Length: 81
Image (cartoon, rainbow, N blue to C red; front, top):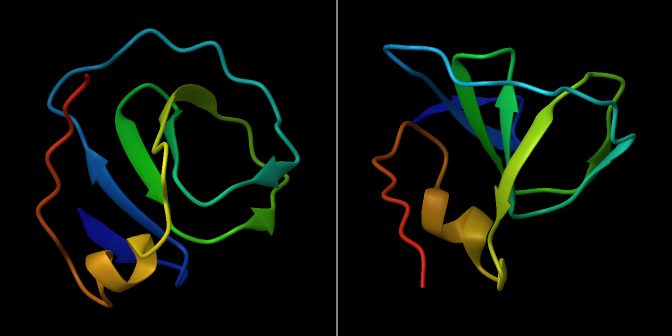
């Protein structure tokens, strides 16, 4: 995932996913969203947003997420319990 804006990591998918975008107004640390239908974004800082996203998940315990992701590009693997 690539760095953007000092608050998110993103990756473009090879194919599109179904989207049902809405404007959440507030983004929280650990939110995992779909921007458009081909861009997955993981937020590691809280902020106010005017963009529309499709929520697809959330990290249950985001403490330390920013430090774990660092400043540059990272490889991220998602699993479910």
